[in-house]
Image (tube, rainbow, N blue to C red):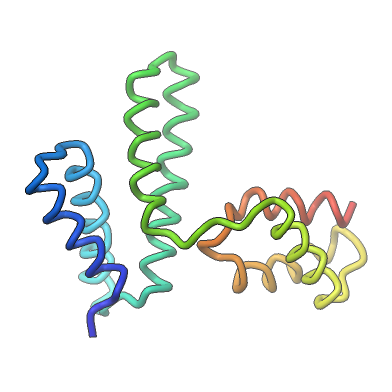
Length: 149
């Protein structure tokens, strides 16, 4: 059975074609190509969770590129990558607020019985399952580190 997210992305591609939104269409095609590549490589049909993981990876790659372009004084390329991030994020679930992330971190620390920075892996293991796709995991990781310090 095809994924609901993938169907949504495909419909958006058709809409972007009809509306002649070149940049949006190019980004949507990049998303579909990345999903197709993963399906072919792994010989599977991606679930919604796997699609979200792929989208998060694409956003992370673009954020890395943005910092590189800004360091290289290429605001034009950084702007293009920022626009791609904005479009890709439309297919992710609503992001949690800082307060909700903090609450989840505190609950995970309690659940894992963590007391020091050595327990960070346990806490991140609990959080990754709960927050993947709903929060930037680098922000979550920094928050865990701060609470365990």
